[in-house]
Image (cartoon, rainbow, N blue to C red; front, side):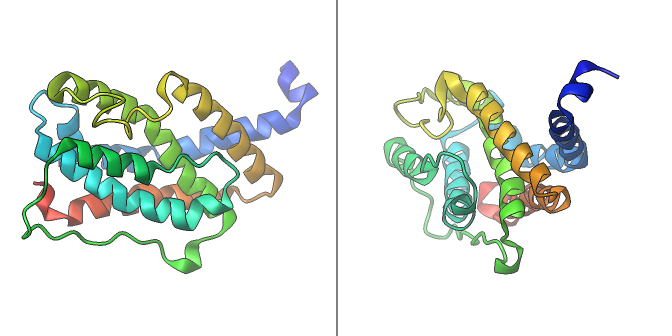
Length: 205
């Protein structure tokens, strides 16, 4: 038995939970990344239209996330919707009027604190992937952390530090309240619903 197990079993509980939720959502994570639009964002062939469509979809998702879930989670709120709004304005592109946008929503009966933490696990973790997308957008389209890609650059050089801080708060809350299953359900719902939302909006193709 190692020293961590002996001295602080609480830390072991949180570490095991983080391993469990990562494993439980691995396939859903891969499914989301397989979406055609998200795949294109890390391609040299990415277009301004595709990037713009991505931001439009994320603005809808982030509006719901900030309005319905972040108020239940004790983390810093960055108002990503405003960053996206600024990026959309600076990009200077507009979708044709015929392009319809389906709305994104989370059923009210699902919204509980541990569920919100699990959903936040996906959204806050996506900022790490956002850094990868940012490099491709900057290289291929010329947008930067101060013009056109502020949403993707959110957190800057401190993105990893903020992620580790989130994981500590997240795992601590969930294990202390013994709500691991509900948190995993929140993460699974985030991956599934966001994937379905991207797939249901045909104008991205």
